[in-house]
Image (cartoon, rainbow, N blue to C red; front, side, top):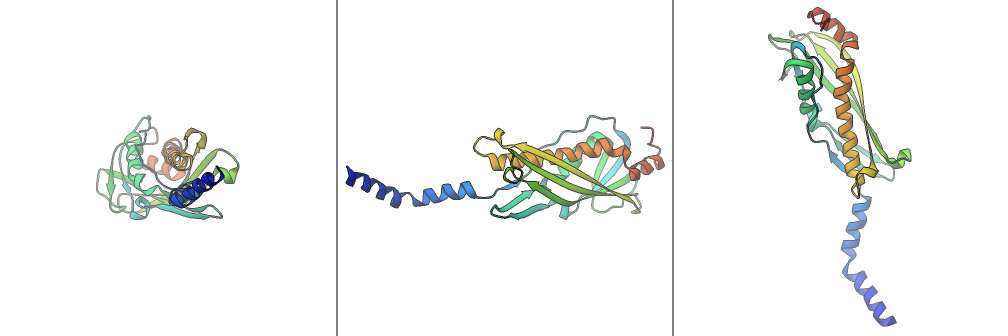
Length: 213
């Protein structure tokens, strides 16, 4: 019996090392996630105006890479959904919109927004000693008149989180992806809710006869 057990152990060690290594690497590997999907259109009274958006390559290809101490290399790709985000936002907030190559346009465009991502941060459950992944995205928006004159700039910080307990065995990838998705949705909501409270926007609305909308 002892010899048979030793033979089985030897066969396990010699026959399954690659499988065992693959399982271990899969369990320890830091994730690479890409935010995907559609976004809700804000249910608000749209401003009767046409606006433009300039989404440059730095925004639409934005990828956050970070090496955590004893945590591996993490990759969060949010650039690919930026156009979908601002398309959904605009379909709710304005009567019409267009995507432009530069912050300059002819009528009927009345204002042009140029967003950039200044910073993305995230935290893991291990860091916060909780069940949650959290993601923060700090945006900066420039607003231009149609002739290319810069009217002003304002920030928006979006936040999202997701509970690992809701994602079965794939807790890391699924939860982190949902936290990043939630941060993108929050950016849309925050922009919509804070729109009229931003001084740069207030002046633009007033100059375009939209302050009472």
